[in-house]
Length: 137
Image (cartoon, rainbow, N blue to C red; front, top):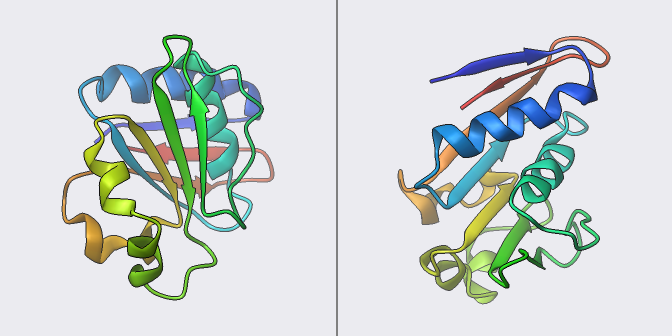
């Protein structure tokens, strides 16, 4: 496990680079943190590091957003905050996304844990101050 503490959002570039470097062979990431802790903001920065130039927003209502890297490879961004059960994720074909070999970034991962097993990288975000955060991955 690696821990990084940043004092402001300007440190997110370093956090994103560290996550990508440490888990270069992994493609499925689950983000854990309270509402407003910065899950979406970190995912946007990771996507930028991976060469995504699309407009990136949280898929709160659509459940999944698809972005594209410079090489044309899709990146999937999930927000499972509004699902009632893991069955809702099954209805959108979630296992197919995970098996695609493409990057998959999940917010509110705890709502689909029964579908994942241990086949993902957990990224925990803790608010340690108004603008400071601790990242564990």
